[in-house]
Amino acid sequence: MYFTDRGIEELEQRRGEEEVTLAWLAEKLRTFVDLNPDFETPVERLATWLARLDDDDDEDL
Image 1 (cartoon, rainbow, N blue to C red):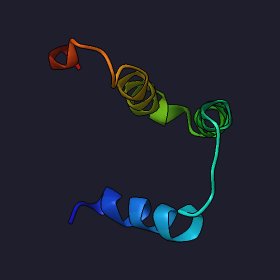
Image 2 (tube, rainbow, N blue to C red; image 1 turned 180 degrees about the vertical axis):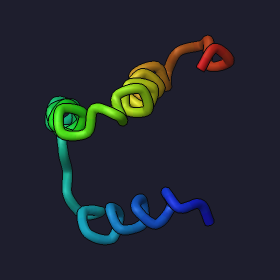
Image 3 (cartoon, rainbow, N blue to C red; image 1 turned 90 degrees about the horizontal axis):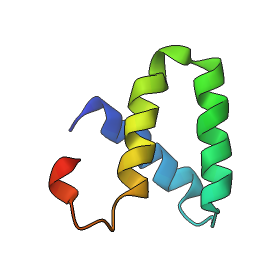
Image 4 (tube, rainbow, N blue to C red; image 1 turned 90 degrees about the vertical axis):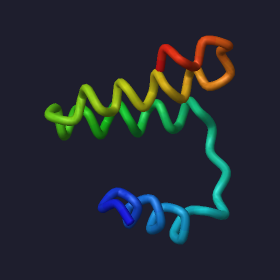
């Protein structure tokens, strides 16, 4: 198990039943980056990956 899996599992356990919009998620990611600027690049990569999930060019991700 990767260290990040623990955070993902906690998220699923605590908020797994909630429904959120992508606009809400985008705002939370912006707030997180504002508070933690060192994580700007990983958050940007995650957001880009999520945005392009349905693209035919998945090899470029």
